[in-house]
Length: 606
Image (cartoon, rainbow, N blue to C red; front, side, top):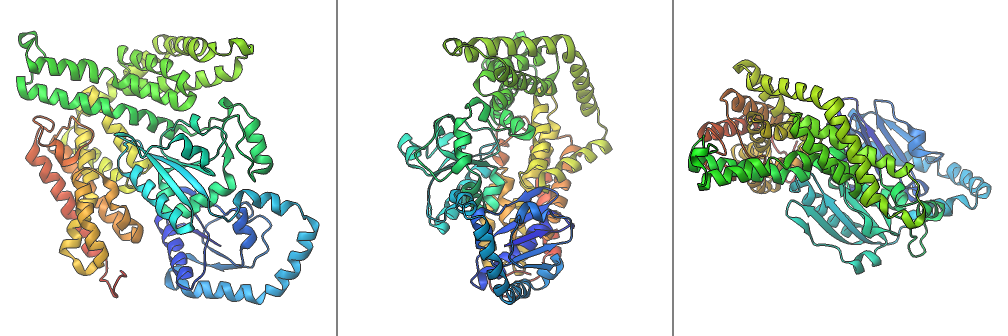
């Protein structure tokens, strides 16, 4: 077992972890990893791993709560600095094993009294984490329903095969559910794994052991996800499944009401759920407005054009598509918090946000207010069994809508509208220098974590401004998001000696993903060499975002990459926009050529 934690940053922590994993596997050993950084903890040790551990490596130069991770583990602990691991990971592994062999006799002597003192504790704790193969069903979903959804699915499938498990993964992407799970497959499953950054409906998994995590955890280490699922998975809903080894935890979970078991996902996940349902309205509305302008000019909405195709398309895009954007955002934030009873209050609050001019800030506030109001009302209101069915269809929507409506119209609507108006005026009135700075910041955020929270914060900010008539940040964000995969592909072509043959082949797919505005195409290259690839990508994306804002480029669609450029008026300066993307890709490519060292051996880069 190994704990990796570097105060140099998340990328350094993951590099230390991967170096230890590679060294252990090359020597024929199995390594369980826990990585600690400013982004939190990735990977925890199961009861089975703790029981089987023969040696522990702690490669850390920052505080780590070892008691929480290791408990009363008696295996010898070998201390090493992160730099020592990067210098010679194989030596660190050998030293840890040597320490283990030297203390084997003492460890064996200590294990017997411990077992005698608590003969029943170990089997009960280890039961959920049995080592046999499992029949697993899984669901993956990300806010845009594109890259992370399918990357997480592939990672889970590969991880399950490597561990001997059978698995079927349903992807809930932008085109709906694919490879959908059947009732028979769910009934036969030993374990349900949900790797999603949005809220996923879990009603059909009642009575099954379920474990939920994010897509990034699945992409980075599917084996660790399965280990955690064994140890931490709990029965979902009110009905117990067929007899399992879940012990007291499973019994307790099964006894709790289903409503009380809805997992608290956090504000970020609730917001991303709302964004994922909002995006289709923004895409359809924005592109229909662009087509209307192409057919009838920029005044196509005037009565003089009434009845023409351009006027009709504008009505559909602006008066229907964009009008539903805020209700969808607020409604599905509330849904993520309070399930179906939250949808109506949330959508009503979102509609009122648009009415009072509070924009996307008001819709976000309305969604959270409606969601938490309905959530708490559901817990507080107790009715006789015969009347309980009135709560989701009458009482909760009524009271929730009343609460959010009163607050929006009488308390928070006007102040939020003032803030939104000030933000919109500021963005529209940005001078060149300020616009470039905003573009640089948005660009750097888009490339910082390749689809993670920082990337999504920049993306949501840009996307939600489109309906307010501010389309320039969206152009900067999409240009910056396209740059990393394109720049990496360019570097693989210009500086072949810096990349392995495998990486050069993978760069072709990365280029296609970059053209489609799927930043995650850069992730495999980042994972191999984060300290060099991330700075290069951030530089290129900052250049692309800054140039886009400097040239006053506006984009009406929040996704689609190069494929939306062919739609008239979707982008106001097509050639300049292409030049901004190309400039960013060139900067990333050249930076990679400077930062990366020559490959010194087949299949390995330095």
